[in-house]
Image (tube, rainbow, N blue to C red; front, side, top):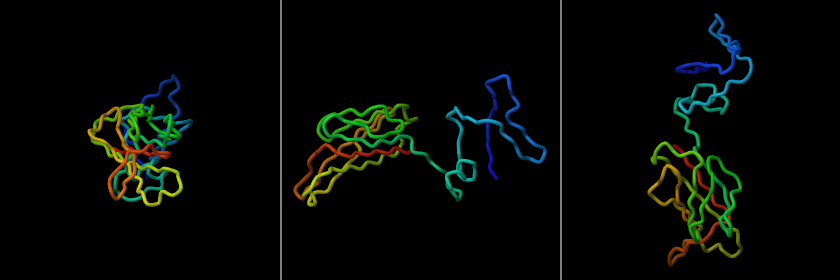
Length: 164
C-alpha cells in the first residue's frame, strides 16, 4: 500500500473536486498531481519506489546533478541534469556549475573520463574531484597516469554524478 504524507494539501484553482477520499480508505485522482515543494520526501514502499521497481526498506536517494560532456577544445555539454555550465580552467581542469545549488557541501561526487585515441593502451585514464566542494559547483581534473607520473589532459568524454 502506498502512503503520501503531506503537511497541507492546496489546490490553486477554484475547482477542488479533483481528489476524492473514499469511505473504504482509497482515493481517486482526476487529473495530474504535481509536487512543487522540495520538502516532499520519498521512501521505499511509496508510489515512487513502486514506479522505480525499488524493494526493501533502505531509503532511495536521487541523483542531484549529472553531466556528460566533451572537454576537448570548447567544452560542450552533451546531456545533463541540474548543470548550468562547465568552466574550462585549463588543460584537464573543469568546474561544473549547478543550476540549483546543493543544500550543503556534504554530497558525494563521482567522475569518469575517457579519451578516444588509438595506441593509448599503456595509459590509464583518470579523473578526480578537487576539494573543497562548493554548494554551487564542483571542480574536476582529468588526465593520464603513466608509470612515471601523471599528466593532465582534456577529456573527450567526461562524466560527473552528484548524490546527496
